Amino acid sequence: MQKYLTEARQLLVLAIPVILAQVAQTAMGFVDTVMAGAVSATDMAAVAVGTSIWLPAILFGHGLILALTPIVAQLNGSGRRDRVAHYVRQGYWLAALVAILIMLVLWNAGYMIRAMQNIDRHLADKAVGYLRALLWGTPGYLFFQVARNQCEGLSKTKPGMVMGFLGLLVNIPVNYIFIYGHFGMPALGGVGCGVATASVYWVMFIAMSVWLHRTGSMRDIKNPRGFSSPDWKMLWRLINLGMPIALALFFEVTLFAIVALLVSPMGIIKVAGHQIALNFSSLVFVLPMSLGVAATIRISFSLGQGSAEAARVASWTAQGVGITLALITAILTVIFREPIALLYSRDPDVIALAAHLMLLAALYQFSDSIQAVGSGILRGYKDMRSIFFITFIAYWVLGLPVGYLLALTDYIVPAMGPAGFWCGFIIGLTSSAIMMLWRMRSLQQFPADVVLARASR
Image (cartoon, rainbow, N blue to C red; front, side, top):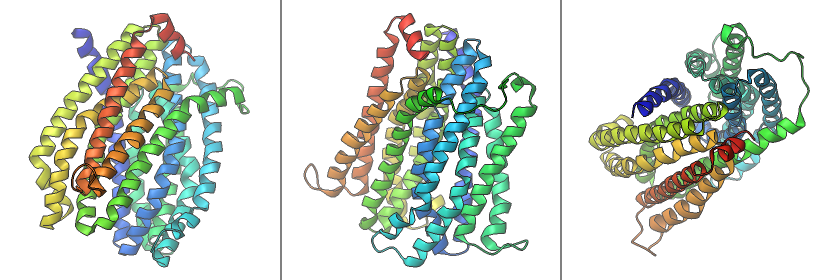
């Protein structure tokens, strides 16, 4: 029992800074929405439309870069820190290549936006302008993630937290300058939000780079040859490991976007209630997601040290801590669901629907925690393909079709509206959790030498 308690403390030490960094990033999005909304509803809507395209695109690149964390953690655990610098350098090359592709997609996103049915032309123009300003921050965002993954792979999660809050602090005045037009800058409205956010990503990357170069504990992470050209074999390894994660993130984000589109014709009250419950559950999801990052680090480090048993202990400890946190958040959600809904709206019908959906959100927090932590565990074992197949089957083969049938048809029960989609979420997340646990057990039943050999790929 003592070894599990010790592991739980180590996991929380790693996870808490990641949680706070994610809170800062979420707060940046909140600040953008509020400050753009102060200009006009059109500007706020333009930022929302642009973000719905930006998120799937940038999270695809983010997923590719995530492959770096378990590699660095394993090298650190196995005493091969001298090889970390070369992998990090190749991570920057990968980020640069992916950034170019994402920037091309975002530059041409206007064709997709203007093809949306009944979209206001002025709104579409502002959304396109927002994306064309924001796309210049793509390299800065991805380069920052490479630097952050280097730190997290070396079990240093606090720098990411500090840079997250630095970004939040910079975001507010820069938004003020570009959105409203101050210090000689034109008032750009929602487009200024894109300029500000792109600038903040570069500030975060530069600040992180300065910290990496000046901190004593990172001075041995150097490339002795200085500049190094792309190592295509190593780049392919990063892509091979990262692509399943990238696709899994893409499918997850697009799933919720499609559900939002399917709910939109149901009327303002149902859309508002759905969005409130979804926004709140997204905030709660920060906890298991951050714990999953910590689990990746601990498991990769343990496997690097050659201890499959320590990796197993870290796996089940992470799941135990995740379920405990889910129990706490689920109880709090049930108790305070109406006061939480009141923070978003004063409409009694909206509050009633949001409070009802939050009961379903409380129910799926257990499954959501197990699958989020499970994904981090499988990343630690470098079992990336399983994450993709589990996510695809759970969300797109089971969750969305069942949610559609329950929400919009009378085939199973009378059409349930938004609650039907939430039942679909529960089914999808529960099936994902079961498959994640099954895959964890399957991996851990292999002989230790096989587990270590798979992890060293």
